[in-house]
Structures are given as structure tokens and as C-alpha cells.
Amino acid sequence: MRSAAIAEETTAARPKYYEMDGALQANANRAWVLAFLTIPIALLAIGFAVFVRVQPPTVIRIGPNGEASVMGKPAKGAAADLATGGTDEFLDEAFVKRFLTTYLNYSPADVDDHWASSLNMMTRNLRGVTLKAMADDNTRGKIDDGQIQSVFHLRELDAVSGEPLTYLVYGVKDLHRLSNGTETTDHFVNEYRIRLIADRRSDANPDGLWIAEYSERPIDGERRERILNAPDARSSNDGSKGGQ
Image (cartoon, rainbow, N blue to C red; front, side, top):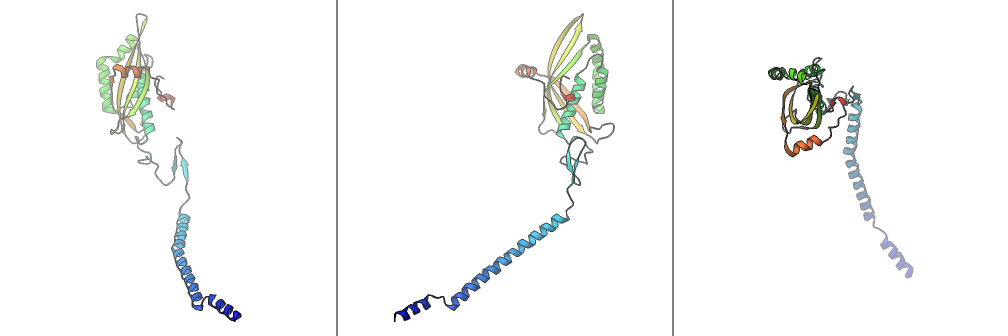
């Protein structure tokens, strides 16, 4: 009797045939679902591999000024294959600094060369107005008469927000005069407003920039003293550093 009871319990504990078949069917269904889900993933991977394979190799060109650009793609800020000026903020500021350094640093011996270079950086209409003002004021004669030497110290350079290629420059112009064997020095603290205009680069104008507007006004009060006592603005280009 005991053996018969144990046998019945063992038989009852075994899963029924239909239960085992149902579990196998459920596992098979899950496997098919997983297989179907992997199909789009596999197709996506194959498509991505084909796309990468057909792309040409990336070639990076290093220009003469050290700028890196990808061949076949326009560089950031390159408006017309670098043929037009005014697209690089660093070069634009360097142009402004070079103009001021050439225009405001002079002595009786080199003023003609300095002013010729700086006037050639201006547009024709601004150049004409400037030459007329110099002639009316006899500026060139006064430099010889007083043996005037000008030394410019650039303090600050800021771009004007909302006005493209327009800059406000703050600096100190030291004028040394000689009269009856006595030297006097005047310190002029000014704000210089300069607006550039872009042009296509050429042999005559490799910068692709012109000085379109130039004006200066004196600064008074506490701001004058702060600018007067401030150090010269630093620059990576010796030629664009004030006071040189």
C-alpha cells in the first residue's frame, strides 16, 4: 500500500504532456520574436557599414597661416573660399591695430612713409577727406616746425555690438615737442572709432579690408586717468602692439 501511494504521488508530481508542450511552444514564440527584432538592427548596421565604406577619406589641409580645414568642405567663416576679407575676427582686429600703429606713431623723419601707408589703407573718399583736413590745418608743416614726435599706446580694443566690423579703441598718444631747446610732452587720451569695410582680396589689397570711417574724441574724468595709467594691450603680433 505504501509503495502504491508513493508511486501515485510521483506520477502526480510529473508535469503533464500538454504542460511541457506549452512551455516549449512559449519558448519558441519568444525566440521568434527576438529573431524578428534583430532583423532591423542587423539591416541598420549593414546600411551604416555601407555608408561609411563609400565615403571618401577625410583629408585635412594645413594652410600657410596654420589654419586647418577639411578638403572639400568650406572652413568656418570662409565666405567665398577666403577670397573676401572681414571674415576672421582676429585678422580684422590685427588690421585695426596695424592701422593705428602706422598712423599715430611718427617722427619728422618718417611721418611721410607712415602716413602714406595708413592713407592707403583707407577708402578713397575717406582718404580724400583726411588729406584735405591735413592740408587745411597744415599738419605736416607743424610737425616739422615743432619737431613733433608721436608715440601711440594702445590700451583697449572692443568690437561694437550690433555694428559689423566696427571697433572702439582706447589709447594714449604722447606728443613730444621741441621748442627753443626745451622738450614738452602732452598725453592725449582718446577714444578712436573705426569702421572697416570688406572687399575681395587682391594683390593691391591682400587683407581684403579698408578703413571706411575714422574718428577720435578725447576722454576726460576718471576714465581718462584709468586708461592713462593702464598697461599697453598685449598682442601676439609685435607689429600690432601699441607704442612700438
